[in-house]
Image (cartoon, rainbow, N blue to C red):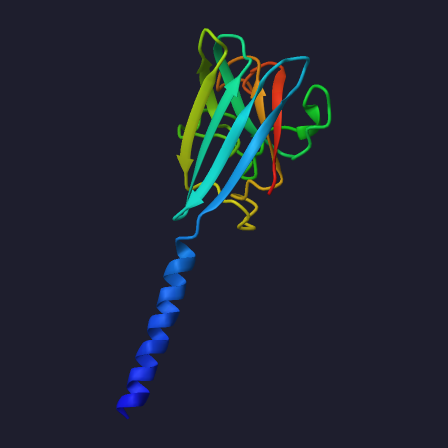
Length: 174
């Protein structure tokens, strides 16, 4: 009887241990931007998912100094010279365009960042509203596009924020 109880305890421990290990798995995507609209913009973006949250970080160069918008778009297609092949903003919950975390906003409305006098900028965002490859159409960023815009997002103009030309694009794929 003691062997059976001990065996059951070991099996339960193994199951719990496997479940815990799987829930702590980290998923990571490293993306490279390609220039669009005759720009010289380049850079990288990372998405790291851990413990149910995704941390996004982009490092971009070749920009004009000042404020620029960055958004997740509907498609992972950067083939058009002007980046239009990435479609509109990713908006799986059918909300109005706006500022991340305030009122209504698209899941793709990441926001603005500032490029310094050398044209370099960085932006970071951590959220539980995205996932990498989870299959939830309202959260899954795989198969989308990442677009850097020439200007700032005004967080008001529908449906895009009046942020200007698409100066860099990256496909969010594995």
